[in-house]
Length: 452
Image (cartoon, helix red, strand yellow):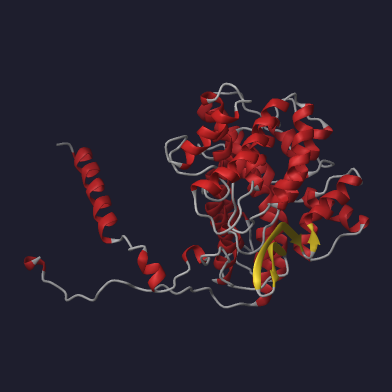
């Protein structure tokens, strides 16, 4: 037996030992009243901190009982639906306004927003030769990993990397927010060139462009895009900018911040969290599920066939056999996800512009059928509705964004929220976060090695 084969065999053996010895009996969580995933049986999160940045509302208290309501999302007390309507009615980009609001807790005046946009534009530059020496060398097959590596490497170019004063972290935050689109798009272009043997395109960002416009400009070989495309992407960024302190990546940001760590390590940790398919990678799963659906159901108007496909997904017979219908349901929202509700109307407009009405109709059919099927197949403690990931994948496809950029686009939006929560955590001067875990292993006497 070769050394490699022996090592591989041992790794398999070690894995089985771990599965046997580290498995926690599920009933013990109930016995010790442990809130798995930091949520109780009703889905309500364990209160771990206070924030002014964002608020999620999914229920009202009526006569002492929780009653589900249409979902709401607020940035510093402002309803996201009103925010999007506001900048849309004025026919301007709004993501940068959301960044300002999240960071500073107030809506900017026209002059303040103009100065802020110029500040972000000035911070988009990367250190000399960074693109060549970091991004284009040994490019990763995963853009999220490339993004995390770039973030950690930027630490080496910062003379005040470990300074956690609010002024310095604010400077680092603005630089990170401004640079993220460039780091992500260049990471994708490197992947495309070195791993897929495609032509390499490196476009410098344009000073007068918004974040959304620069993403499309840097991504496309000809740098061309329509106002409608930029507008839809801008709204997607605004909707993904923050979601309260309880989502996994933002909680990661606050946990690492509480330890006193530097901004680069903190954001890299958040990226690692967001990469997971249960978090930022969910929109890719939705897209993949629909690609699979379209191969299995040729007639998109055949609701019976679509129903059976969804039932098979829940029965772990269809798609990836996970037992999930991706894009349906949310840890907090029940009746509706306000981001999905808002996004839907713009997605419909884009589908008409792109000649993809039939595909949008298929998504609408699944959105209508899935909650009923889930309700019948599973005992749910709350309602089920489409979440923002359900439509974001379709939007990105209509915009011609590759799957590899779905989660990085999420990161480009969410970095504004991460930085806001990091600064809030630092200003609050909170204690290091140390959750408690109950040990359920019985005590044992040590056995000499020759007697085992």
